[in-house]
Image (cartoon, rainbow, N blue to C red; front, side):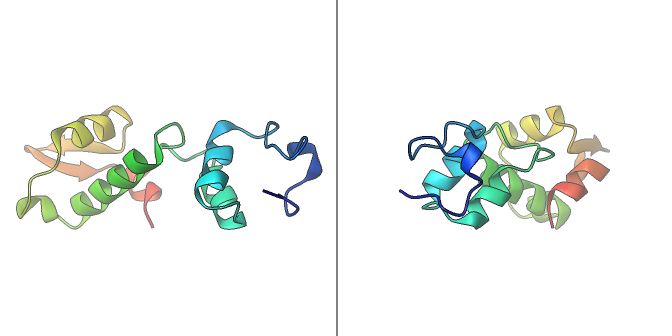
Length: 107
């Protein structure tokens, strides 16, 4: 795959060895699109070290908590535990609530 849109100091012999792993996996997954590069390399992204599928699931769990859909369908307890440990969710009166960091994580 040719990555002509990337700065050349990141591309060595056609490989992305100069990039962080999160960027390389995003580019590989999305076929080298620049969208994947910019989205997957956000240094402030709390899910940057997570697998792509897990990051997607956790973002949807944040959206479910924000919309209070957990009242209709229970939240995966593992997702809730992970989000609490990342400081994105806190429990108030036994209800999950997004913290400011959690609100900043999702559009």
